[in-house]
Length: 233
Image (tube, rainbow, N blue to C red):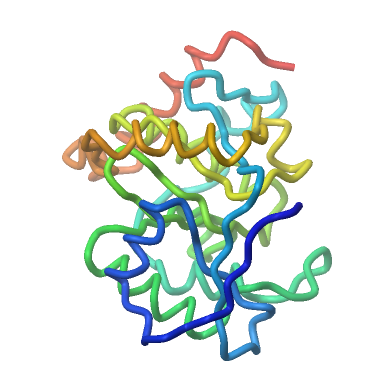
């Protein structure tokens, strides 16, 4: 995937600068988790998951209906980030270094970053995190310690974003893992049009927080979302 990478850092990055960068369509990465430097990325083609046409495979829909995990929001954000940064059998290295953890934890503390977490028998076994800015949500990374946990977290995320009034789910890049949900690439100029539209209105990740006080409230939201999905395979 081609794109523009700017390695210059004239000042210490802050969460506020990071939000301005997202609003401008760029985001930071590190070469690997041990790197001390970050660089800006502005891909020529941007990955997006359409919220209106999100595709849920039939097997995954059946799995979610069985409620295999307890889903929590924003209870262990740092742990989710650390898990996404950890090595696994299919991921020998990641771009999440200590500086990335510092910056995004700062965003979390100001309500601009969130985690969706899958718990099983008291253990965190999967999840994802991302950045929230007005009507746009920027998915950063996900992990699974139990089969399909990250997929389940993604479905819950999409249900939450739709309910909360978001119009854009940015995935940065597109992988085979994401294509099964309808993810596609759009040219940079078209992406900026979508981003600009998303930034003119407010959205709320916890739009019905009172109904999410128990797992049943959140599960009910997702069950309703799944019932609205007519295209499965």
